[in-house]
Length: 76
Image (cartoon, rainbow, N blue to C red):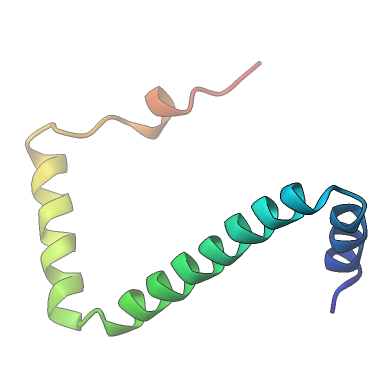
């Protein structure tokens, strides 16, 4: 177990049981979601990647996208 995880668990252990359970439920749901994502990502075929890339190229060509500088303007 990493030191950061140990620190998090130590803090969680200080909370009332209902709060501990709430955090544990969110944590377990996040882990399950991550496992599903990894499984789906790994199962994506080359043809599917090619289709997605073609869709993105079409969106760019038709002006359906915004430059990243508009979405995430640099702060000065």
